[in-house]
Each structure stands twice: as C-alpha cells, then as structure tokens.
Image (cartoon, rainbow, N blue to C red):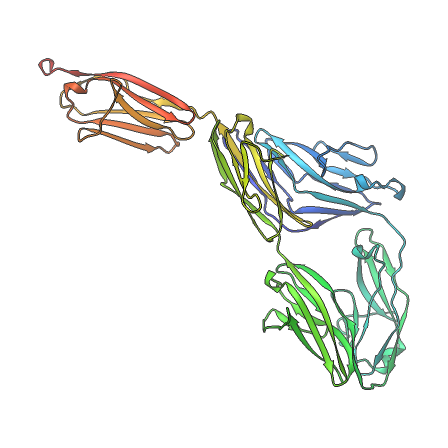
Length: 508
C-alpha cells in the first residue's frame, strides 16, 4: 500500500509540435511527495509522457541518473519507479528518503518533472499517552493525546473512549476537535468517575495504538483567573481550506474572549466564527495571513494566546508566448509569470538542462523571469521550461520552440507572357519563410514605381504564406521587360524573374 501526498493540484500540461506531429505533456503533475511504509514499498509512475511514446528516465535531484538495485529499486520500461519493501536493516537514505525527478524525451524535445520527494517510513515502536486533568464543576477540560515527536507527522487520532464506550457526536458535552483533542464542556461531578483513552492510527502502516487511561478530578468552583488549556503557535493552511485556531481557558467566573489580528480587533466577516474551541476560519484567503491574539479575561485576571497563521496559495507558472516558431539565427524571447507567492526562486531549462546566462543568453527582470536568446542555432529548438520554487512548493510550465530554416522559398509565381496595349496585367509571387519575407518588385533591375497604373498589394493567406501582387492597368509598350519579385528576410533572399512583352499596336 502506498499513499501519495498531493501538495497542490495542476491541470495536465500539453505542448504540440505541429511540424513533428509529436507532443510532450504531464500527468499527475501535482505529485510532489510520496510517503509509504517500508514494509509495503511503493510504485511511482513517471509524471511526464509524450506522443509518440517518450523515453522516460529517473534521476536524483543532483542530476545523477539512477540505476537498478536488485530487490531494492527498479525502473520499469513504462517509466514506473518501484521501491521494494525492505527490512529496517536495508534502509538507505540515498534511496528511501531522497528527491527524484523524471524526464520524458521524444522528437518534440525533453521535459523534466517537478521534484518528487520519496520517503519510506520505518516501523518503529511508540506509545501514546494521556495525562490526568483537573477541572471545576461547570467549567471546561481538555484532554490531549500525547504522541512522540518522531512519529507525530504520521499519526492520526481516530477516536476517544470513556471507559469502554466510544465518544460520539450524540454526546452533546463532549467534542473532538480537528487536531484530535477531547473537550468536555460544562464539567459535572459524574465525569470524574470515568477513565479516558485515545485511539490512534498510523497513516502509512495502519497500526493502531490505545493510550493509557487518564482520570478527571472535579472540584467545586472557586474564583480564579483564566488558565489556558488549548492554544497554538503556528498554523499553515492552503487557500480555500478551513482552519481552526485553538484558544480555550478555564476560570471562574467563565472567561470572556476577544480576537485580534495584527494588533487590531478582528473585523466582522462571515467566514470567521468564534466557537467553543477557538476561532474557525472558512475558505481561508491569503489576506488572512497574520499574527492572531486571543485575549481571555474575567474579574480575577487575564491571559492570552498568540499565534501565527500562514495561508498559502499554490504556485502557478505560465510561460508565454504559447507557440514559438523562429528561424535559425533569429532571436527568441520567453516570459515566465509566477503567481501564488511573492518569494520564489526561478530557473530556466532547455530540454531538461539548466540554462545559464552567456553572451547569447540574457535573463532579465527582478527574478530572471524574462529569457532572451540571440543567434538561435537549429540545436536550440525543443522544450523550454520555467520552474518556480518556494519551500516545499514548486510549479513549472513549458513551451515548444520550433526553429526552421527560414530562408524564403517561392511557392508560386508568374510566367512569361505577351500583352496587348491597354490590357490589364496581374503578376503574383507566393513565398514562405520565417520571419515572413518582404517582397519587392523590379523591372529591368529598376524598382517598380507605384502610381495610378502600377499598384502593389501584399497579404498573408490562410496557410501563413506571403502573397504579393503587381497589377498594371492600361499597359503601354514601356511596361514590357524583365519583371522580378525579390523575397527577403533575416534568413536570406530569393528571387524569381520572367519577361513580359508588349505587343506593338501595329501587330494588334
């Protein structure tokens, strides 16, 4: 059994190389962490693929291509990375707790996936415990399931028991919070007659543990200052998710509560709700990030809880323009737009290899978000990726850069002909090239002068080819000669010529 921890979701990305009739794309591009039990092993498909079938390879984050280790690690022909189940003695941090990435390569180019951290969790002995608590009648008490720090990230509190009876939502004075704490509200003397236990489950091994039994000592109420029972120091949540900021205190009389954000009273908002456990925020937004203070007081004193809330948005990267066609020797410019965080590290890759600035490559902008490349060679074509990284989060986007031999090529032209005086004559040249060629006309090596009888027009047809027409009305004898259309762009020049003869009036 293996479990994928999804850091954020991202749509399938696809780039099509029209000329090569091939494409590269990502599937499961959101998978950035795979955690599994060492006793079960795991299989991780390569997040990248292509049409036609791409060659898939796995690498360590250092760039070293991985190799098969019999009985430990194997890369299948379909690109799936398999880590086999192992005994604790075979654990290797290089293999079982490391960062990998996968590449896909076909005629379109080569792309690399985002980093995927693969971690095997070893089975280790641990115990969970609950401590005895004291509470005044009519007050509140909080029991917490204490989990060793070494396994805390993998353990979930699944239930609480009162003696042998499982605590459920029908017990109105009993509440289990999202963090696994047990609240008993309006404590009664009879609550001290029972034993309280928590049950936990290991997220990856499935192992369960039951804590020791803890007792509640209930006393009659006496005047006392607030005493904090449940609090927080830091919470992180992804945008649009719900988050709970615990703040609960005992005291007599019952304490009052007030919340502040960044030293200002919390403004009314339908997404914010004070509950018996603290502050609940629905559909958290990045603007909710800040320092929260929960002030607690009664007539005998006061206390406070101070904690930091960080609301994160998933990083999103967009490279533009989406389609890039250029010619050998031309300049290509790409731009990378990043949202979701103001702090990030940005890197550019060409066919999976990191791009460094050079005499022909410039990276401009505050975060090197603009990539400008001059004098492009045919080998510079392929997949260009922009990666943004911030902490454990990362995102990427890529485009295909297609470089052609952009030298103009004449596809259609005019032929020699004889015209009658005052006849209408139309000559045309159709040419392709990258960038689009400029077409000029000459007669006997002299530029054709536009006037009321000589009109030149240009347009681009549906196939993206340049079409130029030279129209001559009321032709005269001097209009005869060798006509040439000259097609020119930065990649070269090509021309075509043919003779057009006027028929003298005496021969008509």
